[in-house]
Amino acid sequence: MQKSVYLIFIIFFSSIGLQSQHTFRTEWAIGASGGIGFSRASFSPRVKERMLFGLNGGITARWITEKNLGLQLEINLKQQGWSEDFSLVENMPIDNPFYNRRMTYVDIPLFTHIYFGSETVRFFVNMGPQIGLFLSEHTNENLQGNDTPNKPNAQHTLPVSNKIEWGLGGGPGMELRTGIGFFLLEGRYYYGLSDFYSTRHGDDFSKAANQIISVKLTYLIPLKKERKMVRP
Image 1: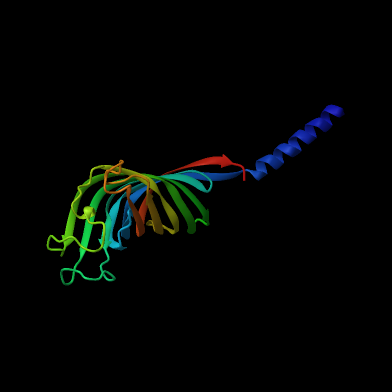
Image 2: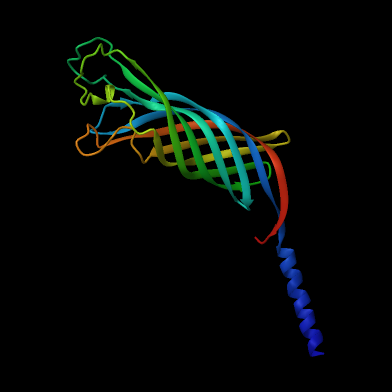
């Protein structure tokens, strides 16, 4: 009798445990993205700046590993830099002065992907480290070789000395999941933790790092789904 009672309890609690489990699908997806960004450089000593418009785009691979959690790897081509603001500078030696430097990088973010919502509409946050490889730069200016009262001026002639940059990025977004793929719209902020100029003691700047605010649209195609049992 006692053994029968124990058996009944075991079957009862086991059935509760099985009912509390549910099926979750791990998911692989790959696709492409494109967007726009507004960047500036964080200089010390400070340089008066405006945001510089740039483009970005690349490929994205995402792996949903757990319920509400995944990893996202990207390889992007990204434009960033700065544009100087002479609007409040007095006694300019030239008319209509302007200066901007646009730098192109290969950017590789590795994000933690946190999501919630339904199988049709999801909201998410991406966040994590980014590494960038400098490719080229282009300067557009009307300074006619003059120094300006917008001190300092060393940023006009210094070359990019550090070809690799790193920092932290991320932001919120929304995902629409359809029968032809997933459409993601998101905003991001990138804060550079490395300097593109030499910033050792005695150099012109003690800080010269990139900062970017961007908006991008991504299209992902699901490649593989696998079922797994998880507890809520």
